[in-house]
Length: 113
Image (cartoon, rainbow, N blue to C red; front, side, top):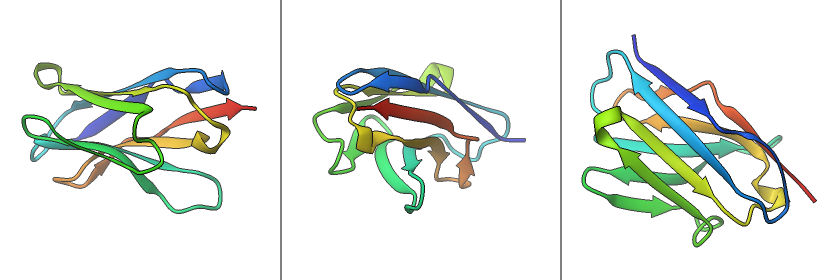
């Protein structure tokens, strides 16, 4: 059974930083690609960042220059370093593996103004 476990969310003030972690385990078809999505109340889920293979990376326009995705392949883990957080970054952040697709349970990020 596939499992994606996120951690690292929380409450932070505007301009602060958080680091999210997602650990994949179990029977997963392929971990070549992994990604972070987020969903704010009343909005559709959107791509935050993705990483493929040896390091092909894409970011959503709203987070470019502030967020950094990275991975530890040996540990089946990806990270999302979030800097200069803004109130509009408030959302539930989900780890995703497209090969399933597989989704984590989500971790709440709240940025206070």
